[in-house]
Length: 157
Figure (cartoon, rainbow, N blue to C red):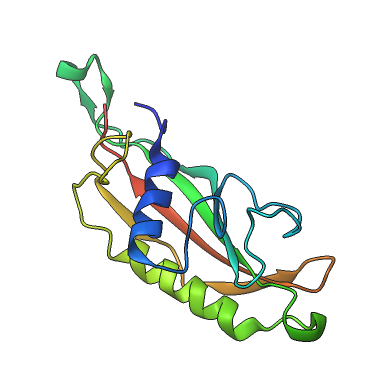
């Protein structure tokens, strides 16, 4: 089993479910861009990143038909939502929290045992959000950073 394409598929799912999220402009994989000075990165709304992290151990049951692989892996991820600089350079937490809550709700509603349209990973057992989004910190420019963590129950061979 492998998480190849898993985080990209979660990004496709989020972009399809919320019109505020566009891959490469407001939605990124693995890290947030340092600034919004690039013409491709939106400066008008919060930016979101899906960052892989360690999850839980594989389910201890093995499938002989699959060469002895674990029945289920459970990779983790962190969603980071960062505010813009805001009007007059003053960041606002409210739109950032609204996007973080929408992303959290979308991932909680991920249909069990399904694949993502246009995705490459394969079947995903389910997505389990561990806690609602919370204010983690402010970055060096004072922008708000909201975080939510989740686990994917991944049954793809």
